[in-house]
Image (cartoon, rainbow, N blue to C red; front, side):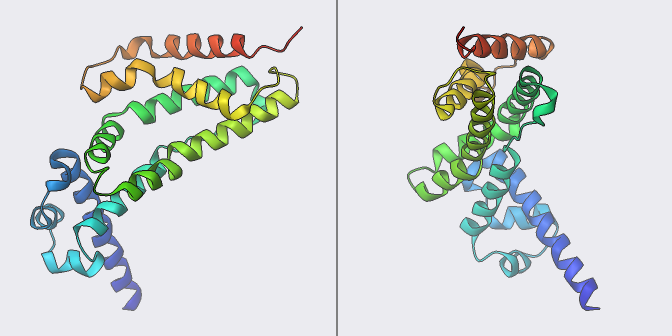
Length: 200
């Protein structure tokens, strides 16, 4: 019985988080607790049994969102160029998808009220990706596949090249040319590798 109760509680919590994410994406932080509970199909008291208040629920939604944008790199055996191409495609897909850009708009709107949350989001999301990429690039530099430089700078440069003006387009709800996505990733990675080519 206890296991069944635990499962039911976990299911309700997941439904609440899904409903809250949808509501916050559509309405921003002004989304009401009543509306979120109704969307999840539970009583408002059930929401408060899982989350102390709306801010607590919002923080959990943001934490889930930060984890979803973390990107890792493939094994070094797949080659530097192929690993970076795979990273580029995955990073752009996750960072530029509608849910991610909506999340960033909400965070930007709430930055003055919840500054610690925005810093935590960066540390757990983009910051984690930057650290993993820098570690990968450091290995490539050690192996002589790239010229020696600050791997954190190189990671920042590649991530910036991958988002560039396209992030602004997505923030403004301007559609992108998905058919040219593979070519765009290839052009960016090739440009990056030329910039950090080993010195002759």
